[in-house]
Image (tube, rainbow, N blue to C red; front, side):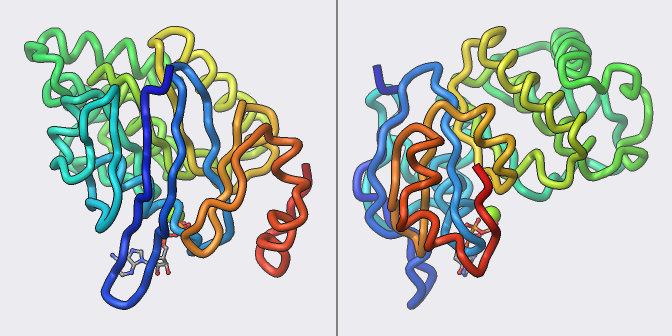
Length: 244
Ligand SMILES: Nc1ncnc2c1ncn2[C@@H]1O[C@H](COP(=O)(O)OP(=O)(O)OP(=O)(O)O)[C@@H](O)[C@H]1O
Ligand SMILES: [Mg+2]
């Protein structure tokens, strides 16, 4: 059953077409990677789905209900969470307080006490349990991304959109993160669409890969098939090497 359906989605910034006529659907419980060279339109597309910046064309449905054009908090209440490329935590709050915001404002109607309990659970889940009482500024960029995942999980989304959350991790951190995403699906019944440049993570975690190039969807299929497809290899040449 598709949970997410995009038909003819486009996004223009003035004269620039960042996303062009993109159509695909995602089944409930799938883990889908969205890949493509720098500037291909991946973040733009993710933000359009997550209500951060609406598309200029097309329709986006979550369980048959229109998402395109919903404000971020409405998209969140509809069950979509997004973790952006650059996390922006509230600097004056602790890790735990930041994490609690997800349940407080995520549309689950949690009380403050419930939100803090949820925060503790999600921080444990992403491996930041012991850091919960620290000021958020003590976290490095990777940890701030995982805090953001914990915060978004607190809102109990059905679909989570992740933008390059594994960038810059070392090998053991990477395999830990891949495992964490898989467990998140199993434990919280999530559907996951995630933008990724780290091919190792894509090949080990994705069940399906979508490839964007100059705003267009040029491939949609199993990782090994897609990443060896000639036009996909060409799209990556001169940018980042593909090593499936
Ligand atoms: N707010 C904006 N205003 C104008 N142009 C934008 C805006 N956001 C993105 N763009 C342009 O749209 C295109 C797609 O950008 P986007 O950030 O979606 O690419 P990306 O695939 O996520 O790239 P990367 O892998 O580098 O993160 C780029 O040419 C970018 O400069
Ligand atoms: Mg991006």
